[in-house]
Amino acid sequence: MSNKNWMPRWFYQLASPRWCYQITGKLMPGFILAAVLLILAGVAWGLAFAPADYQQGNSFRIIYLHVPSAFLAQSIYMTMAIAGAIGLIWKMKVADMVAKSCAPIGASMAILALVTGAIWGKPTWGAWWVWDARLTSMLILLFLYFGVMALNSAIENESTAAQATAVLAIVGLVNIPIIKYSVDWWNTLHQPATFKLTEKPAMPVEMWLPLLIMVLGFYCFFAVALMLRLRNEIIQRERRAGWVRELLIEK
Amino acid sequence: MFFESFGEFLAMGGHGLYVWLSYGFGLFVLILNILLPLQARKRLLIQQARRLRREEARS
Image (cartoon, rainbow over all chains, first blue to last red; front, side, top):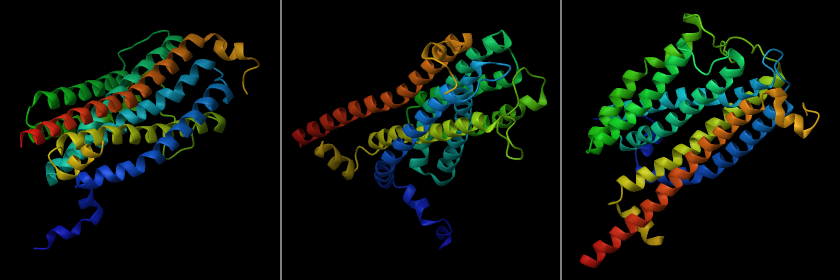
C-alpha cells in the first residue's frame, strides 16, 4: 500500500521530535531578531509618533497592545485546536506537544487583551468592564485555555491527556467565530474591527501601519515563545532517546 | 514626534496612567513568556543530566 505518500515529505519530518528540535534551534534566532525589531519599532511609532485620536485622545495608543494580543489569543487557540486534531488523526506526538505548548501562551495573550481592554475602557466608556458580547466571548476564550491546561495536567498518561485536551480544544473552536462576529451580531460598546480583508481601514495610514507592525511583531514573538516551550516538551518526552542523552552529556 | 516635550509624552494628554499601565503590563506578560520557559529548560536539563548519571552509576 502506498497510500501514505500523498502527504508532502516535510509533514513526516515534522513528526520527528529530533528534526523539530534541530529546525527550531535554527529558526529561533531569526524570529527573535524579527520580533524585537518589529515590536520596538511598533511601540516607538505607536506611542510617540502616531497622531492622537480626535475623540479618544492619547488613550487610543493602547490599541497597539490590545489588538495584537487579541489577534494572537484567537490565532493561538486555532493553532492549538488544529495541532490537537492532527495529533488525534495522525497520532503525531510533536503535534500534541505543540498543542500543549500553545495553551499557556494563548492564555497570557487573552489576559493581556482583557486587561488592556479594561484599562482602555475606563477613560473611553467610563467603565472597566461591561457584560457585552465581545468582552464576554473573550473571557470565555480565556476560560477555555484554563480548561485545556487543567485537563492536560489532570491526566497522568501523556497520550490520553493529549487526546482529551484536543477534543476540548476542537469543541471550543465554536467560540472563535462568536468572538469575531460579536460586534456585528449584537449591540455593543466595542468598536468594530480595525482590519477587514475586504475594505481599507477606517484609520489614517500613520495610525494603522504601526498597528500592522505590532501585529506582525507579536506573531514573531509567539513563534519564539512557542519554540521555547516546544523544545522543553521535546526534551521532557524524548528523555529516553539516544540523541537527548548525547545532548545532556554535552552540557 | 507627536509630542512637544518629554513631560507631555509621559502625561499622554491626561491619559498617562492608562497608557503606561497598559504598556507596563504588556511588558510584564512578554517577559514572563520568555523567562518561564528558559527557567524550565534550565531545571529540566539539570534534572535529566542527574538522572542520566544516576542510571550510569547503577549499571
